[in-house]
Amino acid sequence: MSRTPEVVSKLTESTYKNVMEEFNPALRNLVNLGKSYEKSVSAMTLAGKAYFTAVSKIGENAIVSPMSRELD
Image (cartoon, rainbow, N blue to C red; front, side, top):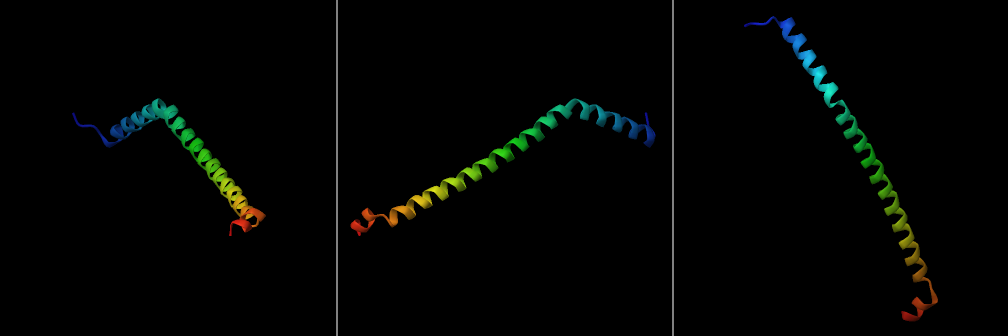
């Protein structure tokens, strides 16, 4: 049974719409998960920078302390 290109096109469109309606919530969840991941990585990066800055300041203060001069 041969179908015309118009019929095939309509069948393809309806199948696509059905699939998108069925899987759309899952796709939305996946996008939201990706956004949450991006936010968490950004927060971890900021926390890492703050930690590095704090450790650097502690090291700088330790170098100029009187006790470190005595240890030299």
